[in-house]
Length: 202
Ligand code: GRF
Image (cartoon, rainbow, N blue to C red; front, side, top):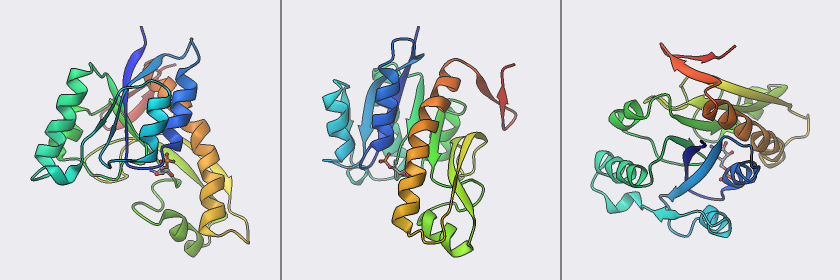
């Protein structure tokens, strides 16, 4: 039986599209059963609709705090019988309670080789540091931002004439390959969160 996945977005949704494409393969062990956006009109919502995936828009501004926003998300996930969550450009930080409740079942993709370059303006940080390699990371979500146990990474070269835009585009291509592969691993129980580490099945 395939795992029921919710993808949470705030914008463009190109990683969502990569996951939608992967899930279209009959043997893929996961199915996207819900897409939630905290931003009305986010481009990714249209990508979900085109794939006939139910969507919900829950603008965080409609809630009086992090806990009540997270409770609304949690209720939507419960209604849709969701087993696991992929964050794909979701620009909100969860309360500790939500992160703990979904621990081991919630993953994120970040456009750097963590633990380098957390937070915002990641490509600017990488260019400023002068690294010759950057990339992307899929990690378990824990209460602290961009800090959960790492499941998978992909590296790309940083070219001498890269701008934030050219580097972001190269990394994004790697993201679109890495995220479906990491979701597959999670959905097949090929990786588990144990004592704060990503542990792989042999
Ligand atoms: C991606 O670079 C992802 O790594 C980061 O936010 C961006 C989202 O892009 N967390 P998209 O909405 O998936 O196109």
